[in-house]
Amino acid sequence: PGKRRNISNGISIRKPHSMHPKLLEHATAKGYWKGDAKDFDWKVAMLGGRSSADELEPEGRELAGKQWLEELAGEGKAFTWREMAKILRDTDSGICMTGGFESTGSQISTLPAGGLHVHSFTANSDTSIGCFKPFSFGPGGAVGTGGT
Image (cartoon, rainbow, N blue to C red; front, side):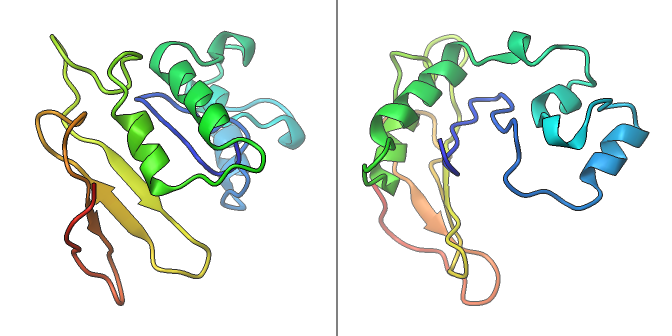
C-alpha cells in the first residue's frame, strides 16, 4: 500500500514508484529483465527472471506484513510510526521471530519529502519489547532519545 513497506527479508517492491533512469537499461543488459518497461517488476528482475510474477506473491511473514499494512494504513486511515512498530513486534505471524531463529533488530524509517529523514532501530535481543531509538544522518541529523 502506497509508500509503506514491511520487507521481512523479502523483496516487497514490485513496481517502483521511482527508479534511477538507467535501472531498466542496466537490468536488461545484465539479463535480469527481458520484458517491456511498462511491465517492469523489480522482484522478478532481482531474481534474475527465474520466476514468474505469480510465483512471487507474498506468503508467510511478508503476507502478514502486507495484511497488517492494509488494515492499519488503508484508505482514510492515519498511519503513524506507532502502527509500524506494532507490525514489527508481531510475534504470532513471525514478523518478529522468537525461538530457534530470532529477530535481532527492527528498523522504521520515516522519509518525508523535503524533511529530515529519521531511522529508528531496536538492535536488541527481543524486538517485540525493545525500544526504538531514532537517528537522523546528514545535515541537521542527531541521535534522539526516547522512542517507544
